[in-house]
Image 1: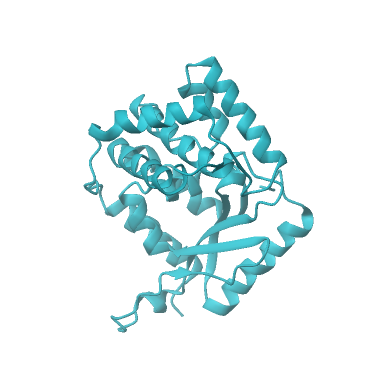
Image 2 (image 1 turned 90 degrees about the vertical axis):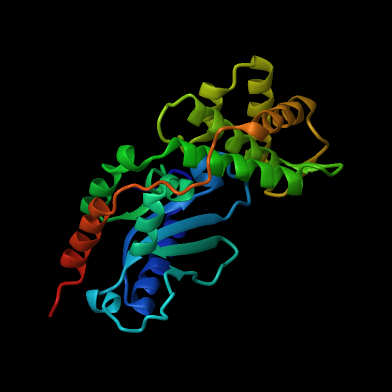
Length: 268
């Protein structure tokens, strides 16, 4: 699937970087997508490309007796335009088991650069079984609290900070509505989770300004948006979300793992 907001040259650069990962790490990239503001729908004029990917090694790599091995991520050098970060398949499957919200968003990103269709279709089919609302609500609530504490107390506030906090808070509202996995696109969350027309208008204006401006442009606090954030953070202080990792079954994920190795890394 081609990215709707990236040029042919950027997509070619992403392809070349992923090819380099495969050569340098003896790996196969199973899936690569856009994460962050471009996937959410409010990228700025100078937003970089946050490419996230999942890869697998040959079978013998996993059978090594080097028990101290902890290299389950790949972080190619960041350039001015591209920020790539990848997880080994085992790491990704473990995080999927605990309903990790970042991973669930990756798997449903509207901007996909590379995909092994058989693997990803089988994996996504497991999503209704492994999505855990309490874990998702807990993660998004903590995300909103952390960003708000670090970025919303000054005399000016970046549009990016506002939108990141708003997205996390609206994701919590979505979880509370028991509507299934949180949508990736921000406008879907706004349309479903914001009742006030005045607040919707304020958010739409903020999104338009961010798209037209630069990533870290700041502005004086916006009263309607700030008030909503404060009210939601107060409301969620005593929420029922739990931080315990869901105990979802291993075997369907082991089956995905074995299938990938049988197709991409057969024994000699």
